[in-house]
Image 1 (tube, helix red, strand yellow):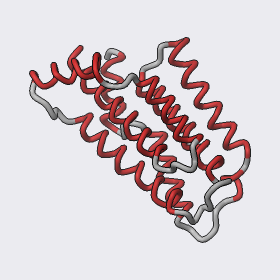
Image 2 (image 1 turned 60 degrees about the vertical axis):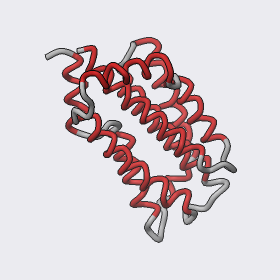
Image 3 (image 1 turned 180 degrees about the horizontal axis):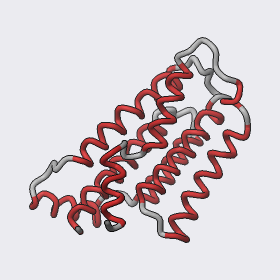
Length: 181
């Protein structure tokens, strides 16, 4: 079984970004409770998130790890940073925490369903390949925009919007990867 088949089986069995989805679901269950565990606000969660972001960048640059793995680690790190960093601006009862963590779960599962299914005809895949290579934003730029969205807390919708755009971009990369096989 080739590496490409392993990647395909990986996102077909689970979500497109399984670590990110599971952590988002866990955070959603925490934020809807009356008591929030104290470890959520510790600095080590922030440093773990920063470490995961840096690790994802290094894994892509040094080891050429597949973009699904790298993006999952990157988004997981951003989620950890989001929880600790934004807690200084918003309380955990704010809709920012209550609804964003819930939003990420179904949107990721929906994207995973699209990644599994044959959505387009063959000629439409050629158009997707053209869009993917020439017109749409580069994943590195979108990752930088996600980090900017994390930093700019006053514009609280930037983080989920840029995260969704990055997930859509990765979904397009998964679709066009099917063309190359």
